[in-house]
Image 1 (cartoon, rainbow, N blue to C red):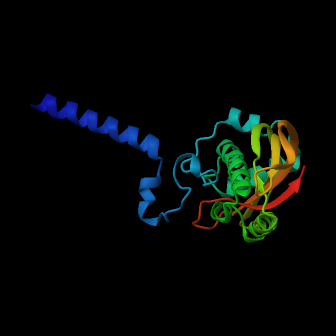
Image 2: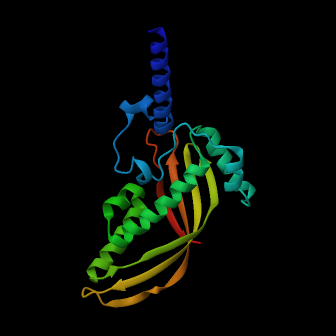
Image 3: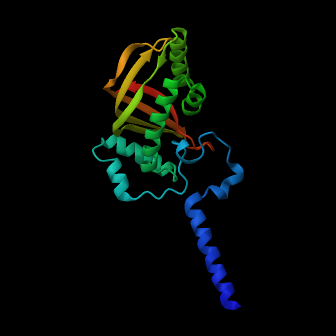
Length: 217
């Protein structure tokens, strides 16, 4: 009987460790979590990671070739926010880039509002309004993201800002109300170079980063 109890305890401990490895530390703060449409899985591209375990080699790869000012900015953000993980942030930024593009092309204002600050959202929303007034639709396609690289990073008091250069191949097509192509071609992808800046108040309980500026690269 004692042996059976010991075996059951070992199994319970193993299952507990497995659940913790999957869920991170979220359960420790479950009552504080505010539901968000992008909280789960790949749909939470820029939520601040919990219990970050970034290794030195991973960090070195992400910072390879960047300017000293960029590395210093990342260091300041990491020091001020112990949960910040650069590798996970870069993966999340790429996911957000793809989601924002798709939302803009589809005219999905709800998704854009969740991922962007007010100024950027108003810019996207205004462009969607103009497109709808012209009775045009976009049939764009993101072919591939060729490069994702840190362009700048800074910490101003508690506001962290990281700008990312995205180099991507995008096929663009504009159609009129009858579905006739009036611009672009799906057969000819063009290179797009964009610098998007994401920000987060690291003193806030909200773990999400938002897109607060867009520029051409």
